[in-house]
Length: 341
View 1 (spheres, rainbow, N blue to C red):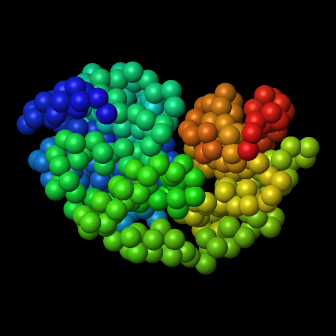
View 2: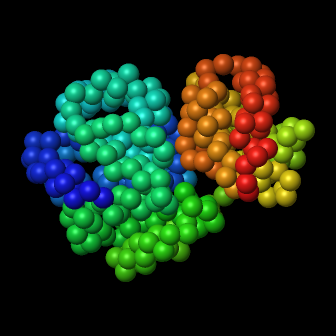
């Protein structure tokens, strides 16, 4: 982290009248939610006026994180979101690197008049006033820990903030199964434990709170919906809105399902295509060096990490699936056939 940027940010945050808007990417995951929770709590502790604004909703399985239930959703309160953005002097882009990842908030944030702070670890970030972006870091939550402790010291971290930061680190690394080979990541976790992290509580909240309907939905996806798209080493899981309603779907119920086909030895890429009321959403996962973020960016208005990316289209599900299958030929020819695993 560049010392001069940190000092510049420190001076900006000394303004007592500063109002701050914190925004995660659309369909916030554990890293985005954990970072929003942690940063909002930090701002509370130092006396800053801040609010988290979302273009949609945080999934239910993450709402135990402190402060997240107080976030303002654009879907329910568009006027309040617009008003806060108009009054705020700083916008915090959390776990994303471009305004296009902010969904329905994009028309407001793209023309934001104040300073923009980006805390992220995705490639190709846009230019903003205060940019802390590093693709080598395991998660935005790890990067946020490094930034916050540089600004206010480790004493700013309490147990609730530590739990939120660890949530992002463990979920974005798949329980430390990928993007987690840097020793610094484990040093950060060790410091969080010393600062009050309840690792067992986080694990319980994330992985031990299933419902019967969620388990049945997961089983339905794997047994009845998953297809292997020969001749490619590609698995596709399409899910209709009707099926979500049949299984009493709640946000977060499908978390991790897209990863399951990758346990099949010959499958290199897995894509989940989910029909929602407002749009069709895509989740991409891959093995090794296969860059599914390029596929998501080129065809599906998305992006993300090399091995984990997302996208969305305002088109019927069958049209989306047709586009996915047609673009597979280009993607596997350009980025998979000669890519090392």
